[in-house]
Length: 262
Image 1 (cartoon, one colour):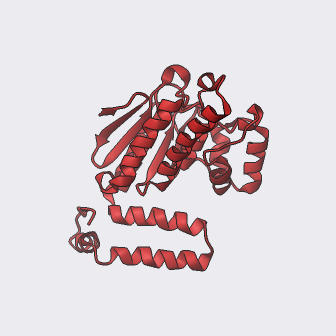
Image 2: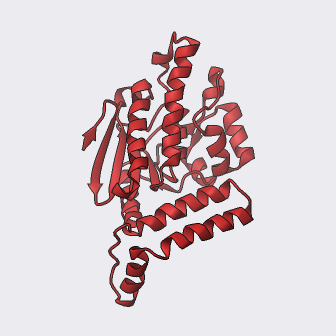
Image 3: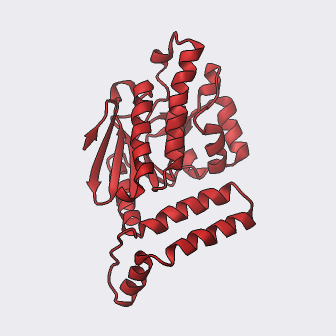
């Protein structure tokens, strides 16, 4: 386990990383140090994607993340506020740029920047007591960590505008109904269920999972023809790999494949 000041990084099973936001006394609110810690963690994942095959991110205690630490922000000058936010922006870019699949295990409230962190994951599992909100508009600001971009891609533009413009919280059942949450779990089994799915992902060929993630993300941001061209380029990356040959051989030999990421 690697411990930062505000984040822990564990390796609970083969090829899987568990990242835990660790400021439970303040609902894991994001202060400057948490931004720096998450930036360091995800920069490391981006720099060495072969070292892990799936990442699970969750929160310590009863909350996932309550958003920005408003006590720290009280009295900040405009320059100090923007300097801090630049760290958060770099953190979000590192999460979004991470080639490795990410599962968010939302164990409680995910508000403002906390919800934005969850939306950076490829999909979300959430506990029954989880609640979500983008409350920035009620504070005289707006989401600045991907909320206005990732939420419409998750729930559609009209639903996203209602959430963004009202700042009202919504339940995990609503998040599931709207397609933002993939699975609702009990609090006791949430992380275990996320890790179980992570193990399935990690058992697949890692070049394949990374290329699938990149292909989906690229396709969402371009026209269909360009997306199809990118998919074929991503597909052709797999043809000369050892893992492709291992997968076909294992199928024919009726055994589980052993992938090496090359």
